[in-house]
Image (cartoon, rainbow, N blue to C red; front, side, top):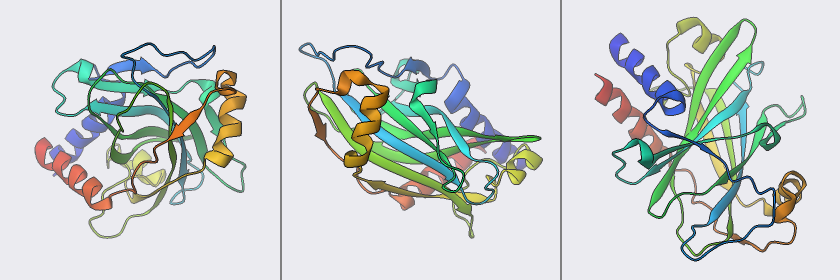
Length: 234
């Protein structure tokens, strides 16, 4: 079991940092937005990450993971890295951090696997991945809003998937991640998100943004994904 847990930790860290995926910048959107024939859509979404299991340690996104369906190569796995202006710390009474995510993939069918974050507060530092496992919609070139994802860590019950690996034991326990799981909700919040996106990325000001809201979070699918990672690591 310890070997399996250690291997799962390597999977989580590998999603964020290893050579198994291509480090990818999010579309800059710092000048007029234009598309050429054959281009794929640019997807917009907001992600709010919150830790209610250990409120001192709030998650801050470091990677949004996207994979081509049936991925076999490094090029099929894209690690999108949010820059500073994409991050927004929420008010202390609200807790958490929000990230303004932009994604654009090569042609093909892709899945938004989830979001890896760090939870830091001296002397402990934890790592967590919020699974989403949602298919990215296909379509013509343009700007497409996928919705708002609220991912909140709460205390884990029974065999629910863990918000983070068990190892390193002290850090993952103190940050509430090994003993926590995620509740995840997807909703349309474009009326609120639009103004904040435009404030950060003025090139969106006069652009028509289409909506294709992601489906509701499938907890059973996430549970199976997590259990499969454990089995494959044994």
